[in-house]
Image (cartoon, rainbow, N blue to C red; front, side, top):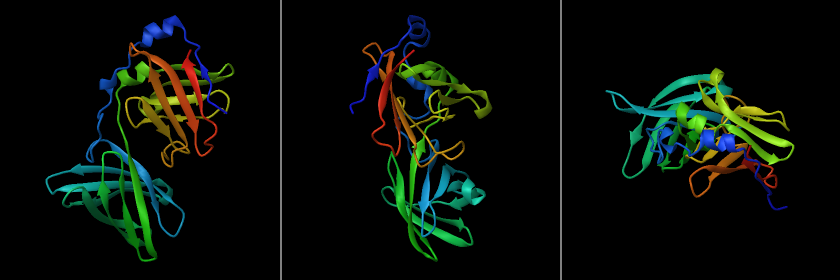
Length: 229
């Protein structure tokens, strides 16, 4: 069924929020050392959610890993950067040591993970930061249908991150940025991957927010569009 476009816009909101302040994002073109990266490690067992932060200090480049579902936080590993976009590091993984070798692009980190039980994979995507001005610029109520509203705005309890609430499914959470117009959410608060919701705002010729595209994954047939109320 083709997606339906609902335009329930109030002039007051259009005036209040106006043009999106794209400068609020910390990185329009993410690189390895900008922002956090989230994804999963796949080995012989169940996938493991991982959050990675790449940084440099006086010793050299390193990566800090959080794996909440494995009760592991702040695992630091020295980072080897090779020719081109290749990178490698190793880290404690359960009772084993995992060795990663892969590549970095502007949109993902992908590669092979080796553990004693065999080979697996690691996939990460960038999670861009944004400031309070950007969050305010996209805040509002968006109608996917007359009785289905997505409310978006800052959540104080989550440090001002852009939160959402779906009045139909009663689901709420945080929307993280892939770009200045594309956002995602994971399966639960604090677990940002795999992507279970993908949203995108659309702007008119004057740069004002015109509509919201909202897709729940993996139910690929459940896409919808809505105008901001």
